[in-house]
Image (tube, rainbow, N blue to C red; front, side, top):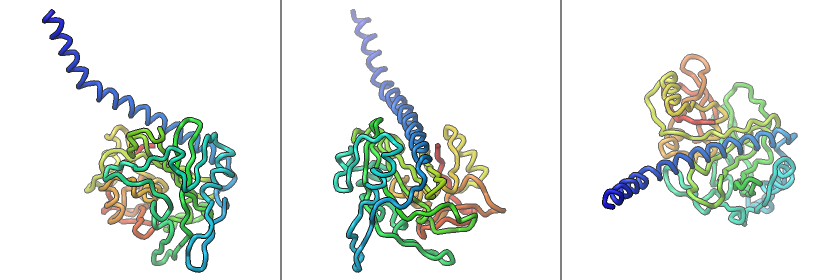
Length: 306
């Protein structure tokens, strides 16, 4: 009897040690599978839309106060709902009714879900850079919806976004960002953490839209050249460096990024997946709200997965 009790005790101790790790691994695999499936459904849906701009009404008076704003909600009801199975749509004042969590956990801190473009990405509202001109737009509020698969999606929409007509020149980013989506794979259930059940997707260009969904992986680092940076990412479970559209999405969703990456984007450029000529490469700088060429000897490293 004593030996049986001892064996049961040992089994219990081993189970208590290993079960949390096993459960965590199962959750990670489940979230990764759900994230890829969600991206596939959204990509197919957006490809069926003739254009992403022009939905809803957004107006302000002479003092700059917004007098009418239904753009995000109209984008859902008149656009996405026609190409994507949606169960519930929530106005900007009732996001919680769609399971939107009150707080999002990032690696830096817990933050409220951004209620509008100005809170999510101020440079979407106003950006200027010498030689590239400037761009401004009226601030609009986020709306939300629940998918038929149980995900919660918060939508930020730019009704005046443009097509991919910048060639290879540097440019102000905001005119080309049509919509941004913060998704929660299990609604208001926990852990409500970026990189686990929460992530983001960004749709660029009004037609021939490119939907990108960089999943942040690993800690950011510095002091590597591009070849070393690529190898560093491959060693992080086959991750990779972001392309220029993905770097825009990361900058738009700066508030959801790891603390070190936030500082990197604010002070330098992140290593892109490909160089241009010599030491020059595309980089995203949301201090000025622009994408342009950077001297890659000063780039930081932030790995992503698709």
